[in-house]
Image (cartoon, rainbow, N blue to C red; front, side, top):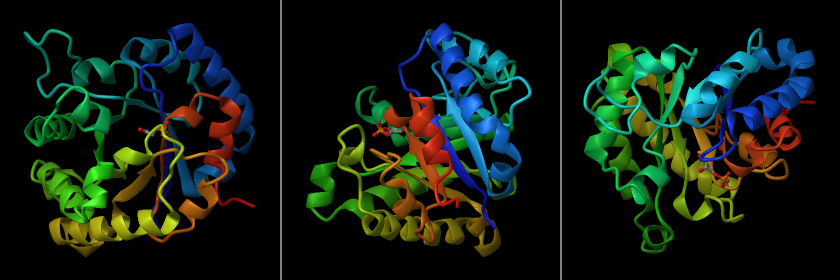
Length: 257
Ligand code: 13P
């Protein structure tokens, strides 16, 4: 069984104080059910770098995991504006989002750079959450599978089989991010199934079946249940709805009685 993963990507939101407040509210919603939740799911938050130390403290004694939104591939050196895996690990960061569409499109990170970051994260025993997804124009031109699988392959090329058991993939169609136009469960499942096939080809069936594939793009408490019911949707990468304790807690409980 693949444990579901519900990850909140806070993007460039929440100061350390605000982050601490959100974690307190989230724990008030989730801590009492932590044993039931832990049976089949994991919860993760990915704050901005400067908010990570405060959130790390606020998470003491919690099973909520801590992630970062990017990472450099070297441990240290002359890389102005970057943060390394050993620095993040000082605060208990275990997961890192890599190749988010905002990094690809706004900051022009290409497949080569993303592959290096992925390899760096794996080398430091961090769990990469590799993001892939097509633009609206690419979807309209029938390019979805080609684009998504090319991004995936470029990332997987940097993921040696024997050290990538914990890799997570997130399918985030660019046209669904922050727009309120979520993919239908069928649209998402179709792409997730193709990603699953590629993962089995790369890792072999057993390990390929262990990789979680998250859906991201306008996930809300109202649409998560039908998404999570799909066979290859193993969780969600949530932006806007992860910034409020109530909506994120509801998403985390997706599919539970
Ligand atoms: P929204 O949930 O705000 O659409 O953002 C999705 C996303 O980009 C998560 O990484």
